[in-house]
Length: 526
Image (cartoon, rainbow, N blue to C red; front, side, top):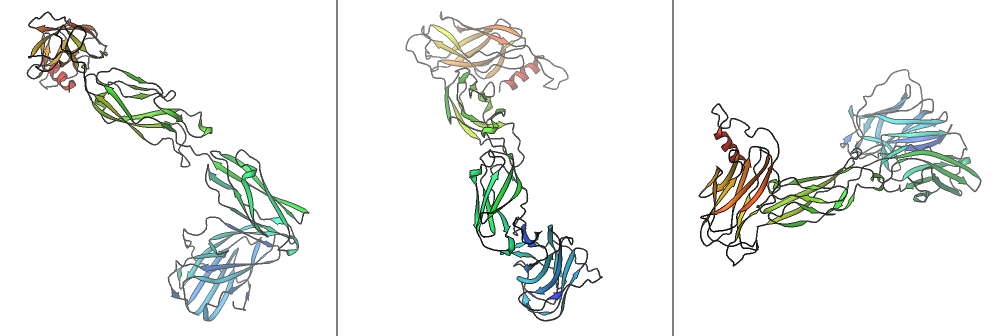
């Protein structure tokens, strides 16, 4: 260290060094607090870091700012003699700013200590000290205060009365709920300039539901200590933390600061099966308590409203979208009649909690594969005694077509009988003017009553659809041709009220006519 110290001289010349962003993101986030007694010296070292290019120094300007009512510069000195020869170095102080001015011929330098500002406390209080600018050879460079082996772009300096037993001021802090709290550093000033002696410390929380007293611990020896805090899980709010210190079992002092934990919404959770198997045309299904372990998140989120969000990759397999009751966990499925296949249900649970502070209101997605197996009745060796409709027979609107309805040849017990030859079945409706059947004899077509459908040789059933343009309850009947004394099948189809049965001029011929009706029904039947 050079022994020459340049004393402070007040120079009435304004010296301007451009302020620049010379602090890398890797610098410590916390602001260091240093203590100095009133009238005592404090050395503030400034160091360059490895982000600089290696270069030979010809001139350097280093400027810091502070509250001159609390802290003043006394002088400046070079560190480690990095200039082999120099023409001058001096300090300029104007209105709360001190600038070190260095000129000379130097060695190559990239990082390390370069200058020390010798400050002294003029009055009690606290000031923010900032490295305003660093300039070498007329360009900005990277560096900051070098304190306890770390760089700081700014620090706090606490000037205290001499020989006062004192705990350094601790800044108020704010964290997110369940966020890890870094150790909180503080220092203890001992009376008479002592640096040793027995110091007993403790910490007390004003909100033990948020910060239990048993989850705070002070570590360290001598005058430098750290407070470790573990907040309660899933808790938020504010607590006043008071640190007590007792020196040699006599004088006790304290320092209080505020620590806040902002609420963070936890994602809801649930459990559910991964597979369901149903038989084709099994009708509406209710699975009670299908979803279990439904939780909105933490204990303090139990009053939130929940809602299941369900997506289906094969929605045509269902009359209505699947639903899950968020309270009971009951699942309702309504598969379309006489249709089989597989559909993947993707389920998420959502709450109405806030998503600020990196909160989450949506659970992870869970999947369930719904398999609808083909219709597979008992096959009978007995002769046919009757025809039977196979359908869950749900109401439709005038704008909709029924799902496929199965007409099946059965024995007296209702078991399926396989046809030995193609068998024609006559379909009729009591509303022949507005009732239509979608049937396949040789190909799929829309026909008014009377319509024919064929149960092929080697099969036991045939499929068809029905549509009626008027609201009401309509009976449909099925009978075999030629007559073989089989009992006819009959069922009532309920058509709910709705808009006009013809929606538009589909074929574009300038009017709504019978052809538009047929085209619309063909579209709906797909």
